[in-house]
Image: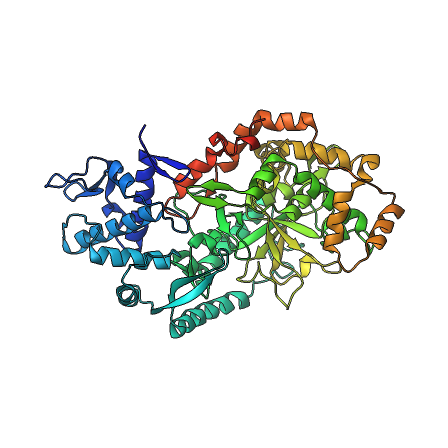
Length: 599
């Protein structure tokens, strides 16, 4: 089959069509063209009346766009934008402008890639989407359109590309426009942060003296409150409607926004994961979608006061024995093929993705004592934990059969929940989807809690009590395959559980783990740390923690099936997102990355 090619990425005709259509539709939405008026796209021979080939022919009569792929191929220059080939984006935006003129004033003009109005529109929109524009573009015309049509007053400036370390010319809001945008969002942000959450009084339904009859009623109560708060939260409502992302300095690609998990994604499930580029470095994470969520949840089959992380449940002040296990765990993870792939990076449609491994989050989910508590964006997951207990020795979940009341927590997400704040000691951390399924299956989040603090007392936290109902517990337990959906069988689970339940193996620590401990504790002497470990019976040896040959063979035997499932609910917030997902799924077929999937 004929293909169009960018660098090492080969696109089929249908993939080329899909990407072009995605950019066109993005621009049409911005222009407020109703979806039912969008044109259909098809591969065709796009010939003009004079017999010359044109990349596009707009069939206004049949609301159709014919795309001549070979002509597109001849137009390719190899120039790329931030998140997709510039030619696709430019053509898609220009095409949308032609279609907009047709739907508003009936103009049936022949598509012309040199049409001035459509070029200026496309370049203006590219700026708002965080892309560089052609240096030959008439900047004055772009600034005029940004002001008159997009209602944003901008100016050209020279900046620095922090990754490439080069000077670049960019267009950004003027100082007065910057102040207007910043003040607008600061007002909404403060309103969001200062909104208090109503508390239950003793005797109210859901309180300890008047619990809900079952966990389902408790969950329904929380979901109702959540949707009421979400619908009246102006900050969140405006985030969901914003057409571009401005980070306070320049316009950036939407997937670089910290709020990308709040953006609605058409056709995505409520529990999907969204690709997000971190602002601090050039890495990506897979965040659980929060588009329909104002709360995070936590379920417990019993109420504990205080509610503390596992690391602080024992009465001790020095935690070197627990921390060193986390470092040993991290050393083990670094030998896994998928962890290595994520950290080395891989290319999709001419963009290289480096995915961050959340070692802390994985440590929390695989038998280690940590200073974090689990939260989830999936109420069904919270309900599962609210009706079960974990048997560490047997490595399985069991139905709770006691007589105590269960509890469902809800944590009110604020505009600063994921940011450090001088007024508090805790921060919410997104674990995201990782190369091991447990954290993803739980739509997991973490909150770090200081040693002497109680989660129950945090101002964002509320909880309700419920009576356990054996019939409902059975139903939930079955829904989660007796816990296997929460904790699927995988080599990391069996390997680390075996270690943590064998006192002899558990006391063996690698020098690599010790080095990581030194690095994270620069205020303590190496001698003190090493002596403290030896006093607790640890033996330090020079070796590389690794999975066994049999464990890796087990991974390779199911790696393709695992990868397909792993990618199934990942979404890229971009017009060519479906295409990028398709290439992500097919990554094992790329000769450059087969090593991570096939022995």
